[in-house]
Length: 232
Image (cartoon, rainbow, N blue to C red):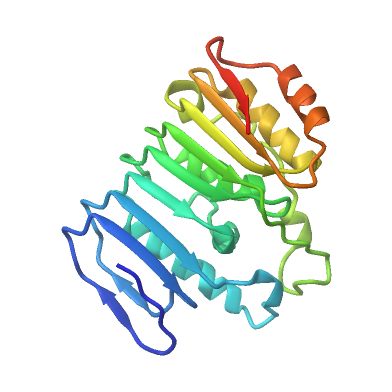
C-alpha cells in the first residue's frame, strides 16, 4: 500500500496486511491500527530537518513517525530512508520491541548515527541482517536549528553492545562508505561486537579512497572468528 497525501486523513485499518509502503509528505495525516501480521514495511517521508525552525514542526513529524513505527512493530523487514532520521529527536528508549524483525535498513550520518542505530538494535532481539547506508549526511551547525541542543547530536557509541549483536546478527552490509571518522568508528564497533557475524560487506562511495579504506577495515578486530569481509 502506498500513499501520498497533503491535507487528507489516510486511515489504514487492515489487520491482515502483510506489506506496507508509505510515501508521503507527512505522517501526521496517517491513522493506523496495529498491524500484527505485517512482514515488510518501507516508509519514505519528505521530512527535512534542515528546514525546520523554532516552531517545533519537526517535533510533530518525529512523534508521528514514532507512533507509526509502534503500530508496525510486528514487521519482519523494515526499511527507513534518510528522511526518517527525524526519529532521533524522540526515541529516548521509546521504541517498542520488534520481536519479529530480522532485517533492518537504516540511513546513517554524523549527526544522527548512534542516536538512530542504537535504539533500533536494542529493540530488535531477533535481528539477523543489518544494512546501513551512508549516502547522505546532514550538515548541521549550532545555528541551523534554533530549538535543538546541538551537543545532543554528538554521536557516542553505546557503552554496552546490544544483545542482538552478540547473539543473532549474521550479515551486515555497509554502502556508500566515504572516509568520515564516524563511519569508520561505526564499522569498527560493529565488527568488534558482532559475535556470530558471518558476512560483513562494504561498498564505497565514488570518491572514497578505496585502497586505504580496505587496509584500515581489514585491520579492525573481529568479534566473530567466522566473519568474512567482502568489498564491492
